[in-house]
Amino acid sequence: MPTITYQGERIECTVGDELREALLEVGLSPHNGAANYANCGGRAVCGTCAVEVEGPVSEMSEEERSRLSKWPHNLDSGLRLACQTRVEGDVEVTKYGGFWGQKRD
Image 1 (cartoon, rainbow, N blue to C red):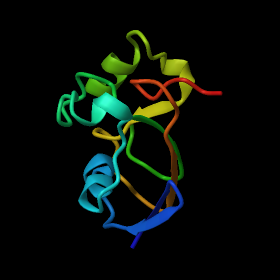
Image 2: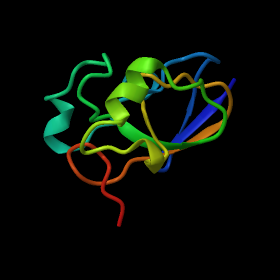
Image 3: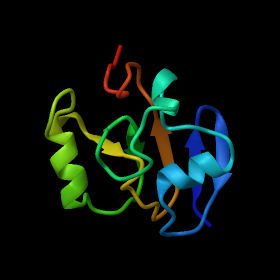
Image 4: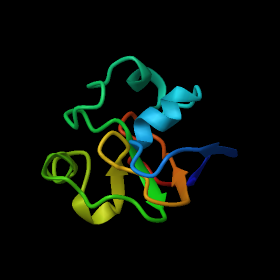
């Protein structure tokens, strides 16, 4: 079983689980502040679940690529949308600041 490490927590999941759902299932959120309530519900439209992921995950979908190519995101940032990312092994996830999670210190 893969392990997701996020905000000091270790979560076990199944290969192929959607990262956003795996986090929400244990009471953790890939969103910041108001984005916890004002988000697209996992449809790759809003971009508020953007996170940095280290480890084996699915390839980027066209929907994800499209959203991450628009403001305030940038495809070169290396961020992924938790709602479009499927866990394929042990991963470490980092959420940055800002409404969309794109502001690195």
